[in-house]
View 1: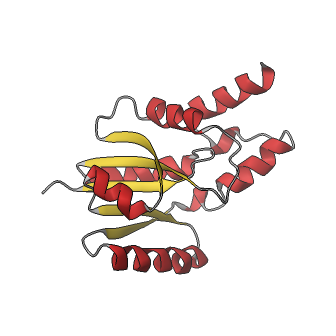
View 2: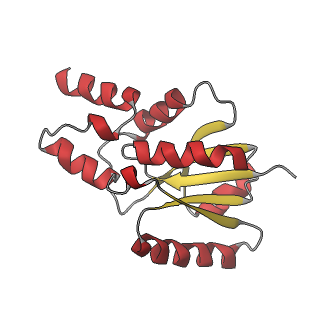
View 3: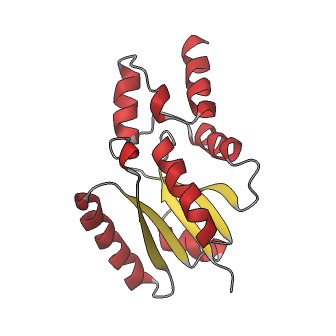
Length: 160
């Protein structure tokens, strides 16, 4: 059985914290899907096509990584792609409490899908997409927190 994982999120935008979790998780899995979940309760800053392009550009040279967009339950997406793991990143203890509740619900929906938690490296603890969007909104420098392709794309859009 292949070890296939889904790393779900909004990735609005994808940050160095996200890519750190992905890169450290890669040795554990045969295939890792980065799933951009459509959340009707959130209005994203960046179009899902742009976010998917960022993911595919960042990991273009790694055949183990593939981006996708999904709607609905994460466990349903896992079933469609034959994923038996959900990958989640943890920054703080409070993240764990929230993520554990989601993992417990997912396990109750499908007992064959296991959630794997990775803690982020200390330098990425404060890197959150929500904070990045706030800094962007007020023209602050987000370059230390984003992969180059994401930062360049955002700057081109601002200047264009």
